[in-house]
Image (cartoon, rainbow, N blue to C red; front, side):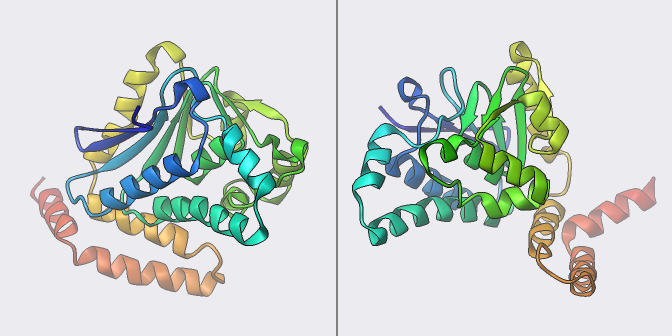
Length: 251
């Protein structure tokens, strides 16, 4: 069975984790397939967005049992390379020009919650659950920490990462981990409607905005504003901007 399904509909690439019998748990093969798919999507000029979702009852439950067993038996160097695989996936999501949206139903736990958090946007069903339970087995959700810290702030990130509890989609939405929550019954249509917004705006403007937003993360305010000035000037030179100004003036 193919562990990752790829479908393109209306300029959106849907990547479906296809291990429903394993609650879409992550293993090396699935992580590699996701990284490869996102990498290939980065060179597809006709795409406007990417959606990552899960087949079956859950989005993703984290690492599978075989992967956990491998962690317990591996050397530091082997674990280091294994961890780098997930880091490369998170980096690929950040580097691709188009928005990557996690469409979460069921449970997004441990590495699955990390995968959702690594995406640019997260939408969820009302019954979805999020959490980082790694500390319960002496593990650390370390690779996603830099991203979560930027999303939520220090105190809420500390609480989520060190207490191991699950939170509802509504709670996740309130603290800023989730962008929007939809009814379970209409989630498919709501996802299509949500991603369709990117077919109605400038692809180049979204790409430049994404790059600017992430590039200024650790910069002092003066350097961040300078980055904004440079991006503003480059945006003015794009065909999308020139055509958009022309349409505006005509109206």
